[in-house]
Amino acid sequence: MPLEESQLPIVDLEKAKTNPKEVAQVVVHGLEKIGFLFIDNAEGIDHEKLLRCCKWFFSQPPEFKKRIMRNFWNPENKNIYRGYFPVVEGEPSRKEGFDSARDVPPNDPEVSAKNWMYENTPWPEEDGTFPFRQTMRDAYEAFHKVAIRVLQLTAIGLGIKEDTFDELFNNKPLTTHRIQHYPPWDGAPPPNAIIEDGKIVTTPVHTDSNFLTLLLTFGFRGLEVMMPDETWVEIKPRPNSIIMNIGDVFSRMLGGRVKATRHRVLDIGIDRYSMPFFFTPHYNADIGINFLSKVTGQGPDHIPERYGPWVVHLIKHVKKYFEYRVLPDIE
Ligand SMILES: O=C(O)CCC(=O)C(=O)O
Ligand SMILES: [Fe+2]
Image 1 (spheres, rainbow, N blue to C red):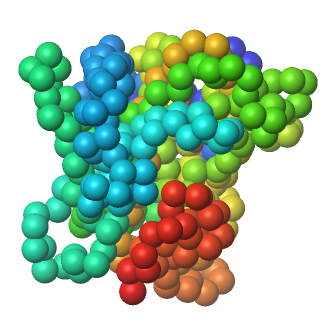
Image 2: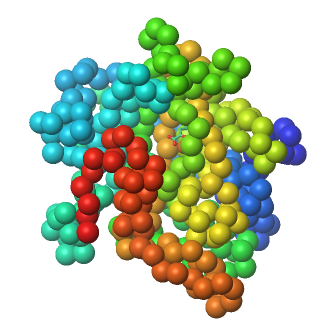
């Protein structure tokens, strides 16, 4: 299908089984030009069930959410990084969400007790009407496999060893698996949510800070992406497809060769749900610049840099997300 019709390049993981080189070209070209792709035929991702999972969670009463709310909003709770975050009135980002991760075993010798990035997920109580924890955990592992496969295709397309990127995620990835709910504005939106042409955002323009993101939008409209010609394009939902985009970490490692593209979410006037899987390296992964020089032995010097300290500095002192800048230093 030409790009005009599909809007984003389509990576077919079924086709990649028999034609990896051809699909690898689509991946690399898409990431270099737009930084956003559709991924078709991913195994183990049941969109309809995952939408039910979101709806089950967000329809729970306030007390349920309060018990797993981050300490920033509920000082009775210990969790500072994983768990539930509420809608914050007056903010242009209008959403509530729940962040989960792949839990590490208690007292893991490789994880410092001070390292809140490895905080275990405060899973909510279940009422027997929906298997929330199991569904989220299964989806996490399915998304993880999809992300690894796409990175293997990226490596093939870049002409480096297929498993080059695997190591960054092998050992305790810091991926955040999030569900989010955007309730419609209750009354007039704050002035900072109103953008050009009177459009209203529920997520202001941003790039993702992680390595790459896989996103389910369940057929909801509202996601807009900045195209290479600097125009905003609303991504039309593609049934049963995953949207993928590059985050700051990967873009920086490759000197901007793959794009961390700006995007935003517009208010669609009804409840909206989405599920981003913020694929993230492990704490000690080397995400230093000129990564390809490290692999090929050619080009400008690679400068090693560990992911954990780099990202803590970024979210606390550069991006200054209000709920993260209060987090303690780890080292
Ligand atoms: O909800 C969406 O469609 C996208 C949200 C997003 O860009 C994000 O959470 O980083
Ligand atoms: Fe995003």
